Length: 198
Image (tube, rainbow, N blue to C red; front, side):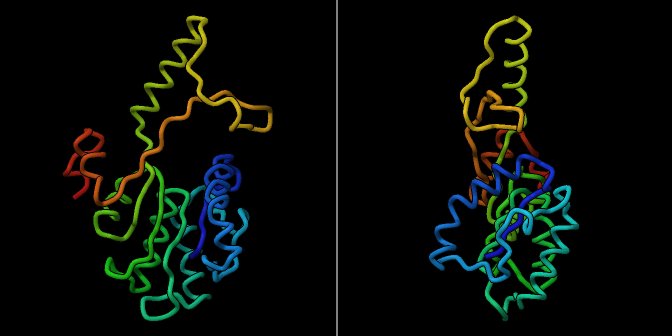
């Protein structure tokens, strides 16, 4: 397995990468998961500006330096904190000869159109879906409450410290998309049209 996260100047990577590593580290320590490159720190796995191009360059370097390939060193999975990085990873893996039949599991977040198409093709395993309609509705509800001088809806008072203190937040339930559920999640809900994903 190899690990990718986002921009080092984005506080979100502390939650995305930190959360992933909370789960993965015990398996890494036991040798169940092997990070062949040894690149496990946030700094080593960061991708400046969440750039597709930077993620692709790093994945190409890993393919070359570690000998990954469909008929070479086995690569089972690549953790990616979001879809723009996942797209670069996928580009590099496709160029190295991987196909849907032997593609490593690649994660993502945002259900970007390109990543959704990759899920349909079998070159990305999943993506966390953050429905912007749900997020926008919650923001409107919170701003409306503040404008009226009432308490906005909050369901988390401990998780998000931005360096100035704990920021009261409303956390929406995470949802993940795969090639098995993308139609109901993304097309039937009207988020994308079928034509957009062709």
